[in-house]
Length: 170
Length: 436
Image (cartoon, rainbow over all chains, first blue to last red; front, side, top):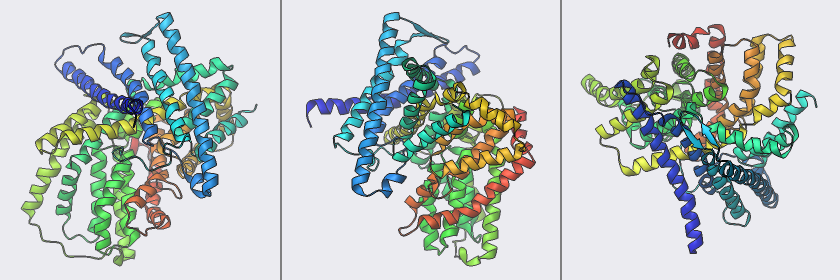
């Protein structure tokens, strides 16, 4: 495997690992709020909104890894009943539709991100964060998912293979 | 375009894309992109799909979902679940059909400790099926109780699906979680009664076998050491919500903390277990949340196109009783469950059913619980119910889907009895939430 491929794999796995760390962060923030409140100390303002934003990052950072490890739920009812050549045609059509969807989302995510950077707008909750932070994860995830579907289309694995080892969950 | 045409096209298109094998999240996204192009004024509408999607998951009420998942993963991966199970096994002694009852008892207890019906079914199936087969249990007696009991986790708190439903339908999540407690245990009782009935009709279905005599002191010790401490987890989640000490998000975090404390106390927590548990939680929560992102504009398109108003007007003006309308909605959920997963059923039906339920003056918590029951049942409805395949995956080689589906049928009947009880006697679900 070339250096670029290794770096790219590392990026996909690294983003998923960050998603896991963010879940730990959410747990710590919520527990901190519970403990402080019971000690009659006001919890910090940032923990609830930070946990909310973290959910978005968990979703987007896990998404490309889930495409790679066949973790997104799908139906195989029709494909399994088709003969191999027809199943392959359907599979290619599925990849093309997914690439079109992810490309469209990538386009708008990047456009919205660029607008947010230009305008410097903020998202107001208990804390204010730049709107850039809201669109950045989508602008990363959708292009990566596009690449993952292109990889399937060009014969690097299949969306319908068994889930990869170590990718099990409940 | 008439409202029913919009509804049929939107749902039909999502169904067609899913059937083609497109991952559910992308099927929703694709249809919403096209729907937004038509109904939201072209490309600016498509931008709105992304803006809605990004906003849809940054919601505090979703936080219990990944935390309940971490809790369940830790509970199973640390081996705490096995300890509970072994203790219950010791306590049951020589009861005829003991393994079937053990399934119901263990499954109901697991349901109070985790929120994953798939994990429950997989665990009960892999633990008990081989033993049941070795003891000569007939396939229906071996698989039926496991299939029925596995689904209890959707109803009995902590239930990740209840949190999801509460969040997207804007139902009080604490009330919805607690509402499932009594009906969940009533259902477990109905399952146990069904096993008794099946054994009366066919005693050979679960042949008696010798079990080593265990003294009472050993039984008490097994319960005290391995089951009683789990009360900490139950209190951390259900107790804290019931006593009004914590919100569902805080209770979920306390549940994770309680499982961690127990795992440390039993010396079964390792770095590897933590990493695997987080990986499992990222995997399932990422999958669920991307479906939420994809489907976030669906209800808006239905509302904007007039489909929601049209349907509500039709339903309220039609000469049909609310109960009949409820049964139709329940039937639709069962039908959808034969093809798609629980999250998708919820995201597809909530924007349609909730305005109807409101117009028909159904209590939202009660209606939410009925929806959960429908979704629980749909997991075991043939030919494609998700739990049927989980069971098939852990069942001995040669087991057919037909055998699995036939085994589930009597337990689906128990679910229908519970539905009837909920319709006749709503306080079954609403009494505990009224105490909050």
